[in-house]
Length: 124
Image (cartoon, rainbow, N blue to C red; front, side, top):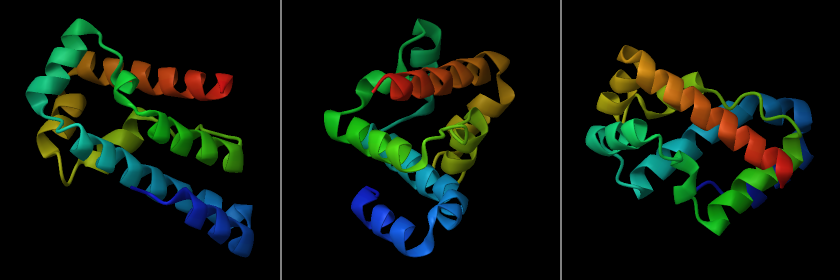
């Protein structure tokens, strides 16, 4: 899992501008880690899509805290997009990435999930 305390130290040393350049890579690592922890598969994601299940309900309190810390450091979560997720998982979860890219319904569900994540982070 991404160590946000280290990121904060880097941010202080390098400045917020450089951190903003690094954030998409950090977020990709965090997202890829989450897919691994959840043993994500095409069949599980497909079931989530058809049930319109909330993807983020699987997050632990600790994982929410990681997202909140990133939000607090940056103040802007616009980089959290469906495309970021697809790029993050493409190497380790090519079947799921392909599902999102080749199914408009799946991609729309993913966009909805990312909007939900941003909204939740705004309220914390």
